[in-house]
Image 1 (cartoon, one colour):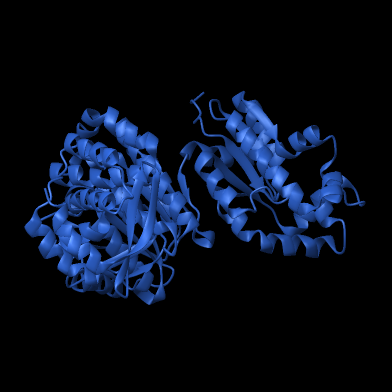
Image 2: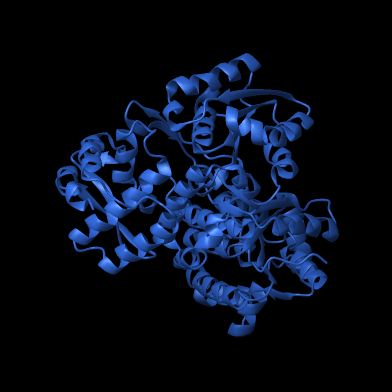
Length: 536
């Protein structure tokens, strides 16, 4: 049998949807440990779930449930296991986001009628389930399903169970589990990011679904290399499919370039049930997402990033935008994709300059939230530069998981999502001052990281040993790291156009250690005055 991912499988969903039966079936089929969370709690407490609810109250019960779940997950870290959860086990959102990064969560669904009938058949008319013990059970189910809607939607997949046997349901759960996607928890706009090799032709059609029509957005270079991989599955959908090819380059990521997508959508008659597909780098995925957010007030879109930068940054999180004059990403919207495919095979065709530049975003991501990734880059720098595909899959996966976790906790950048801007305040200014051609985005971010770390040192936030460690890694990865006084003087004049500016201040991101960053409102004038002192 095909080997299993090490990540645990958690079968979630409302009561009486078949979680225990399906989880036990798969555990037996795979020959792995099966854990039933309710049974484990009853064993520890020496009481039934109903008795615990009655004696402790729901709040204390949920706290114990969360603690038990995390303890069981820890036991499953080194070997596959399948766990069936209680219906409210993932109601707490912080816990849910944490669990989604550690395990594959599949939600089982059933109709209200089926849930009530199954609950009565299992428990009898006495109503052993505490949340259905009073009033009208059907109305209680409707109310609870409404309250928990987001809980159940934020999962790796949803599986309907009405009218299906256990083997059929388990087969669909297993398919979702083996995909081992990264889920971006965004309520009703939640979606998965599939990462691996040779995925476009085999998975794109399923992600696009059944639209009334599709518009493939790419650029002239990417289309020649990978266009057929996307066009074939879209044509197989049997709906009208159009295409627009943009001019490559950040200097074309503007309103004029955006209008080309609108013209193509208009000419093809794309309506609200249509879908856009963005095949390309960060410029293409940013523009496709923004076009999708604004065309007929919003249509679905699927991201197929083909560059390292777009995989680890631009295609995940729903931030879509174009540049306006010297203000980078100043015209945009938050609009989540329906799904993302990161096919690392496409990275073999990326230019050396673009690929190496994008490694700065990988370093940035590691500093923000993944010390293991940072150590991996230090230990395997040569393999990273040689584009070892298995290592790239791991790197992209870890980067996407960091970003997915942050986006899930702060979709609109009102809090910790700002941490993703480490190195970007001065980096964006450097990129803009060069007309988006002198430096690639990745190169500018690399220099911006150096500037942010040195500025943090001068303010007493960043240890010099951290700055040196990052510099050593940038050198090993062949990234630019020497700051020019002239460059800094020119670029800092553009800080007033930074989209994160609030009055005379900007939320500047400082690093205290790998995995420990914070933001602090900092006067633009202070950054401007101190910037030239950061030069080599």
